[in-house]
Image (cartoon, rainbow, N blue to C red):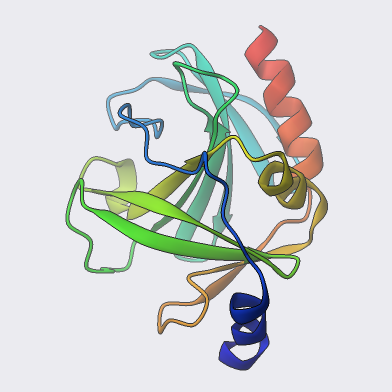
Length: 173
C-alpha cells in the first residue's frame, strides 16, 4: 500500500477548502431511531426518524462505512468509517485523516466517536461539500482508508452510486 499511495501524496493532494469538522455531529447516535428504507448492491439505506434524514451503510468485516448529509445543511456530505477494533481514539478528538479514492487523495479533520455508537464501534467522520469527492465515492471502485499508516484498509465501493441515489430518494420522503 505504502508504495502505491506515496507518489499520489507527493504529486497531488486534493484538499477541499470546505472539508472541515462541522459543529453538529452528523453520525447517528445510539439513541437515534433508524428504520430500514431499502438495500442495493451490499448497501443499506436507513431513515433516521429522530433527525429526519437518511444515511447509507456498508459493512466491511469488523467495521462499517456510513455516508449521508449533515442534518443542518443537506449540501454538506459526510463519510464515516467505524471499526469494532480498538483504534485508540479519544471521544471528540479531531485528527487529520486521509482517504484515497481512484488515485485521488482527500483529507480533512476527522472527529472521532467512541462509546456513542451501537455495537461497540468507534471511528471518525469527515465532512465536505466537494463535488469531486462525492463523484469519486459514487463512481470509483475502492477506497483506501488511512493510506500510509499501520491501520490502512480497503473498502469496496461497489454499488455506491446506486446507494447514493436511493439515499437521495429517501431524503425526499
